[in-house]
Length: 261
Image (cartoon, rainbow, N blue to C red; front, side, top):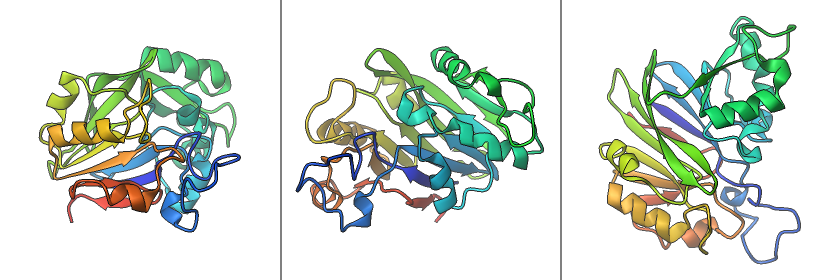
């Protein structure tokens, strides 16, 4: 299984508009964060999770050349507004609609934002086409399975995802944009090789876990390695990572994990 962190930031990532001075070392490239998303290659099947406004440039910078399945964790702007750029993958897949999986609430938002893209094929060459599907508890894909659970994020529920590669048994949990992990989320992640979890900033936040809460959740799961993601300008990479337990790290844009190595 291969995981590419296309983005690890928020709408207040680094650098942000009118960024307060002294919050992050902009000379460190790991502090330059675009909106949060990952790309998972599992048994040769390519799964894109979320597409923020920088999705096009993220794909170019990380050489993403294939998307077979798209999963939307939730339809907030920093996760959904790049979906129009999935049009290129419809072309590359022979002009067929791309399977889109999410909650009913998020799919409703997709239909309202991208009404021209809902159908079994693009309206013309070069246009996107989405085939919306409600995310099941267990999604069977050619390369393995994706199990889902709902995580609390203010007034909406977010999909938490656990990937299991069929050929290797490698497991990855992706729990972004959440205030807490549910007991079901802990159970699904109890045997994962890697955990990726929301760690927004040092200060508490009403709808996201802060660094302290994310670390506590990661320690409870106790995966061989955990990564914090979805960070604001208040998280300096070098100083924050130096304070973390040895098996917990900050993710950064462009980080690639090959779980078999």
